[in-house]
Length: 314
Image (cartoon, rainbow, N blue to C red; front, top):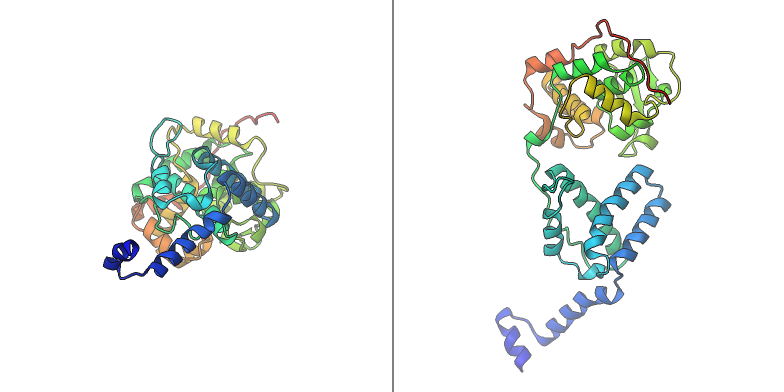
């Protein structure tokens, strides 16, 4: 009678309450600790053939989640707790994470909880109510035409193709690192991004436009990987010599997309070249981010007399 009295304002019966309770707590009975569930998730990624880079990123980001929730049951973690955890993430300088970085954590957590739901360890993902951070256009950092020109002019012979293709073709960092010279088709002025090397597992071709063709002209007979060994050290030296102190996240790809949008005014074409399935994301992120006059200068950055820079010993 007391139960019926409590449920009356909601128009529910004792049977309704019992069914709700069973539905809510059945997943908890079958759930697993977060530590064990993440181990199974990472094993599934390896079995499913996901890229080593993606696996490593999931492992590193989920390790931070394990610190806070490792001994908790997956089904017992609430949406509010996940939201608070995401908002509390800090970088190495103890500052809140940038929106783009925080949203990458959201994506990895979402993949994990979707896997857990499929396994019957929770009834629904606590990320269904989102908790994504709002990404403002100011967070999309790009290089000025002057900075990109300095970078190309001061790059070593080993790193120049990496910089030029990144800034003039917009390949993702992982795609650039996997790119082989056999996939740079000088005869047809196209760069091929193979499905196995693409984030979206789909093949695409990106045009080699006039400026990029001139920068790559000395490389037509090259073989093997485009990116040299000890890449990070070489890139840091190039940036230092070019006097670029602040390096935005994904600067080459964002610069390519921003100046492409302003110069060619074709969101559909840009989405195809970036490897995006939806041009709406391209339109909302890169439209009117730079002035057309700057975009015109960017696409006219051609080689000048370049000084010789000694290579780094392997």
